[in-house]
Length: 159
Image 1 (cartoon, rainbow, N blue to C red):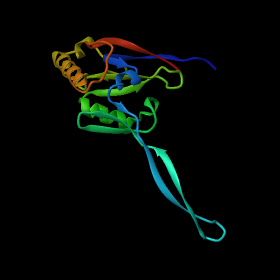
Image 2 (image 1 turned 45 degrees about the horizontal axis):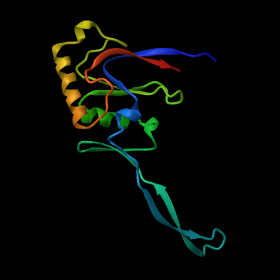
Image 3 (image 1 turned 90 degrees about the horizontal axis):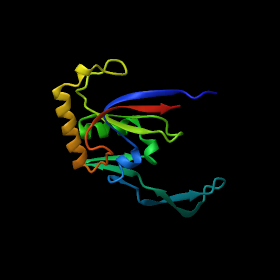
Image 4 (image 1 turned 180 degrees about the vertical axis):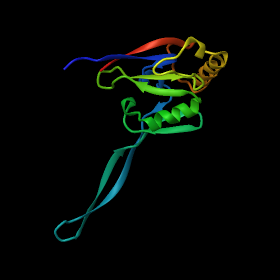
């Protein structure tokens, strides 16, 4: 079994999910519920059982509250779509959660990609302006980024 290498081109930001969402992620509070119990043979009612479950974890971005099952490695496409809509940006996760190489990527929706990359001409003044708007929105939502300014970089992926 070999190791595969790949990379994503990002014009914007790429962040570790646990750092990016650190200030807006809230762990769910335990929730108790009472479950009625019955004898399987006689149907006679038994004592109720109190069951404690973890409540949903949440990510809050302004008025948008996203319920997340589990930790950051469990972010699904629907969750990322809600983050993207809140930022009005393109947001995706790349990498592999099992190798610890999972990264959230953020860029402008105005960027016109060709296949897995883009031409230099795609970085128009409108894209630059939109990246500045996204940067302000991330600051407003208290999302943590490692670089203040957007950058052009490759995100390595190891499978």
